[in-house]
Length: 364
Image (tube, rainbow, N blue to C red; front, side, top):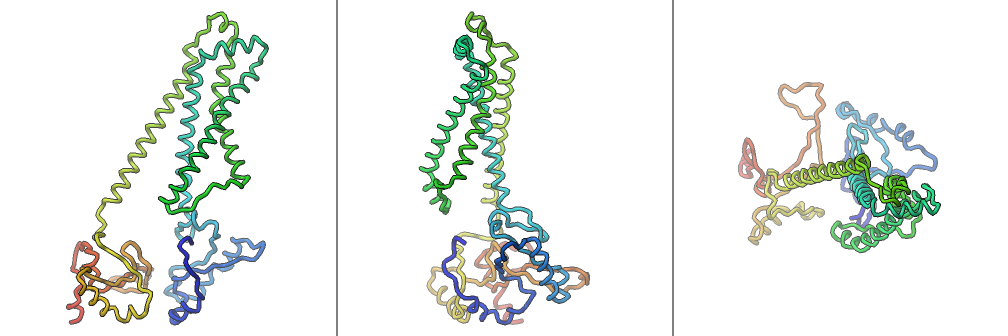
């Protein structure tokens, strides 16, 4: 409800729809329910499921209408339904972007492992001296993991700084009001916990690999990295480049799909097209006079009326009959009422047939 500007009593709207106010076949209105404490949503939905079905006639009962409750916390991310069953919604994008972010983070961890193991010969003497001085392997593992965690925490700090600097710009571009919950302990617990797990994963292989060096060979100068020792690093490099190539190919494919959607023919002309909502009875009752005055200015090429926008349908109807129709067929058609000038305004592309004609309509 980010665009909510004001709230008015329901009675004002009820006066306009008094003829359809008690029509159980009308689906144009939303109903908000506040459940009592300790009431199960699923049980409440089961009790009201057939309330509409029991009140409709045989024509509407063919559609088997059902009422169910949808918790407010799921409105944004779980808003898609099919046959009355929730099939997801924007949560799919959350999981998609989360998986992409996880893959990129995994690549960063692999890169850190490769860089750490590539410097193994430099740190071999350090490991040998520390072992001669009495350091156990567990102490060396702790040292290398500590270095990895320190790098991760520093990266986490710079990440927060980057988000803090770019968030106002992002909110302006996206039209959002996102902020960082500095005072929320859960935010810090999840952030630091995630950083800790990342540091442990990134430093695990280097810690185990470097701490296994033999101090005798290192100090004698006979230490050499064997061919088998480089196999894990090669595998990680191949995995890193494979995932990178997959991400690049996926990005190109998505970009081309977006460009196709933006440039594909839509069947009407969007140039110079403006849509305005009529919220006044005076405008509805004097539409022809208003249209003539607007056209007389010369700034408007044509003007038309429609029940729905070009990119949406607000109304559906049933009960249509035609020759050869199956009597048991459940029909429900999306309908849009327009006046004869609608085709000229939208410049729609008619595949077969003719456009509406005001003069022809008057002669019928």
